[in-house]
Image 1 (spheres, rainbow, N blue to C red):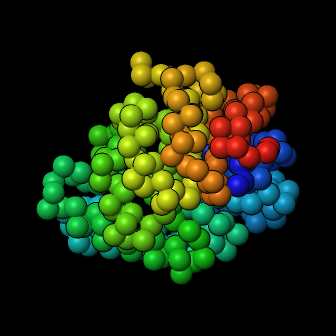
Image 2 (cartoon, one colour):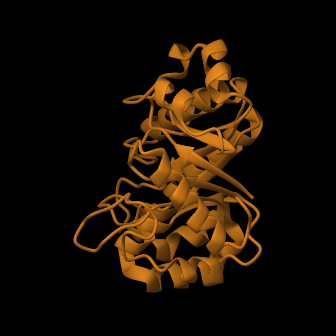
Length: 249
């Protein structure tokens, strides 16, 4: 199991992040860091032999009621995946969003969009992992996301804090009990129900024992998504997660 750290779209923060991490997760795309603006040599120096994972645009919806717009969304994501694949990215995190998540008839459109983007990633040599954002207005609910992943052959990026915000520790337990084998990538941080989020692990209300129970022998990747530049807090969070998942770090 590899443990990494998210750095937003900041190449300087990437370069200065603790060398103990196995990979770095970098935000790319519209509203973030366009791949065309990334100097491959600078990126390689900053990674310093660590692997690269990317996060695709945070605010880009996956679906529209207009077929032409859906085609454009897929074309844009394909272009991003080809670019980051050429930069050496191994995984790309995709927010599971929908123009109307409550329209049952529209669900097939969302499934088809995910299927097309996952296929584009496969062609680019990048594993697309679909992240749960059901706590947000346009995020596909956890109760649906596992089935969407099943139908599209997608792996899941399970964001522990997002799941807690959507339905508490019970939501974490339910999803991992049914779909833990689909999880390839974790986003780990802590949260409080009052709205505090992306805190160091152990500072909030997430029961990481529930996570370890649902991910027995997990062998994927874990990204610390803790919003701090304090290396000590980041490394402590990594050590806590590793302890829960019964691996050395």
